[in-house]
Amino acid sequence: MRINDVAPDFQADTTQGPISFHEWIGDGWALLFSHPKDFTPVCTTELGAVAGLQGDFADRNCKIIGISVDGVSDHERWKADIASATGHAVDYPLIGDPELKVAKAYEMLPADAGDTSEGRTAADNATARTVFIIGPDKKVKAQLTYPMTTGRNFAEILRLLDSIQLTAAEQVATPANWNQGDDVIIVPSVSDDEAKERYPDGWEQPLPYLRIVPQPGS
Image (cartoon, rainbow, N blue to C red; front, top):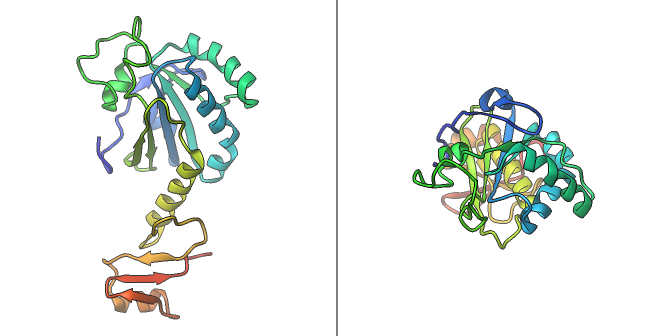
């Protein structure tokens, strides 16, 4: 799986009923984030954190969906723990993947991992810890993989989504530590003549290849 690969389509049962993944995404964005096993401590906090940010993702036209290599019935029981521990109800779907099909399709588990989650520990599934941001064209725009012991920073994932959506709409890139509203970089494929039409007030140019302008629309 690489950036700009088409995200594998699949059919699966979820806590909100069966889905066909590409159809479920529709014409918006999607955040698919995976977990090694239900009833694990770090993942419990993460699922609750994302539930608390669901409105922020919705504002960005981005759906949320989680996956763990366990069945939907386990997910339903886990949701009660998540709400109790974090104060946030999980109102987004959780994919059941007890045959490991989705985890393998997304290359989070090797092909020889078997075909059942039964008897597998969280450590066996440690590599199922990836966040995928998927665009309306159903292509992977970003992926981040974390170790089991490090909780994911979903404020950073929102920042990443903001950057991806901005740079998809405008011919700009975002510099290190960029946040919404900060200055951006004109991409090299835009000539100076084209840039003058887009940015008649000019730009800062500390290096011949580094042209800095205010964020469009900010």
